Image (tube, rainbow, N blue to C red):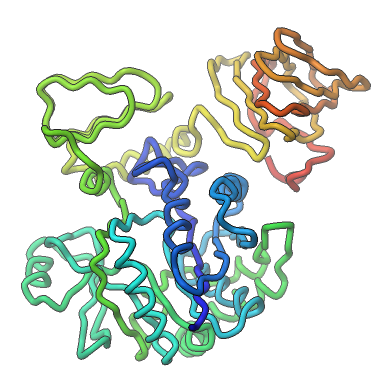
Length: 470
């Protein structure tokens, strides 16, 4: 049996799922459908495939540590790789770079390209169609997965199936009338963005139709660097690479495209309405997440992260509460959430990128209060982890241990603090926080000073390789 090498595309931000999805904590890392994130669910799905190799995961540099944490939580993989994109160039360069990386690691495998943020309800059928696709790929095809449509969907591109498994054409997202025509014809399928091919076939076709892209990504791998579990594409070479989706760069041009029809209970969760479609509902058609109280409410999605959310007399409505933002909209207009995100970006609002809780490789911090000259945070450090050895120019910090044990470097002193003990760190003092215990360390940090931004930090030593990054 030919080996299958999963390549999981875990970049992107999922802006239509704001305010849960943020630039630094995007959709694929959220636990939207069960106790696992979409990324974790994807990894568990591929782990059931026969002949499967350890996954290769492609992420943005800023998501590397939380991605690694989520993979390690599964305890499924002894060996895997995380490829880091220093710049975003869309799916074609990401796939090309991953294919070149795999070419140097394994021989003869079929590469299985999967987005990290899709839902597949029929996992048994998933195995069947992947094996069908692998067989076609081994014969020299670049195989795409066409999803059996359940309605005239305007949010997806379409694949026109020709004779047998041949792809006749790819179609852009249609309007409702055209989508209805596609559905009536019976040989049109939703474009899932999942693919299977051998490295040899893929690189041959990229050389024909996107030679500049192939050359740039080949060079970015050859000049890339390994850092433990991470492999970084070379930034200089990848910056030269043209941007483009795999459909535009290759699939619409190649003559070896094939399709397998897949009835998988699939969704790309591209909007809150799409999430409402796939989640279990109560007897009134409502999807409820968190602490929610509904009265005379029908066909709504109501999500609470921090506090009680109550609705009265609502219908076909979306309500999403987070610690720093609340979204209310008709479910039918959930695609328009991207307009809010566009405004947040234009106004440079921090709610675009960050939650009030921010995850770091050592744990997390939550902003409890923020004012012009002071800020209060709750800091959680995982057992055995430590922050960088660092200094701030403009802010003073006062740490109070709530639970656990803290080992602290404070200037020339190294001290151990326990529950209810505290220390003060003046601006300009080199310091470090570490959890030497076996339980999580929690402390309250009070910052005060003329500038409290996260970029006021100078690192002198860091076990996570962040000396040149915030």
